[in-house]
Amino acid sequence: QVQLVESGGGLVQPGGSLRLSCTVFGSIFSAYGMAWYRQAPGKQREFVAGIGNRSATTYADSVKGRFTISRDNAKKTVYLQMNTLKPEDTAVYYCNVYEPHFSPWPWGQGTQVTVSS
Image (tube, rainbow, N blue to C red):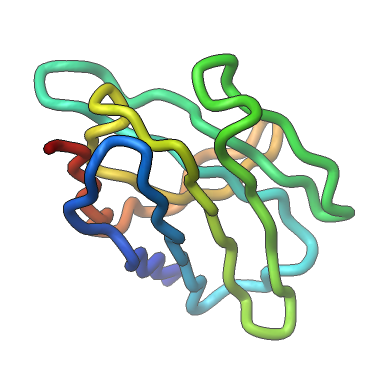
């Protein structure tokens, strides 16, 4: 059973930064692309950023230039560096596998990011 454990969220002022981490347990990590998603209150979960197994990256337009996704295969961990945060970035952030025609792994508990003054 694959388990995803996200961490690193918190309360930050607009313009601030946070670094999220997601560690994968129970699966081969290096073979798969990984992505970050987020869900704001009352909204559907949305794609934020993805990184392929060879570290090619892709971003939602809303975060391009502010967020950076990276991975450490030895630690089976994917990161999301978030800079210049805005109130509209407030959401619960989740990670999951990012592969075409691949069902998502069981979702973790996510990590709450709140951007507010």
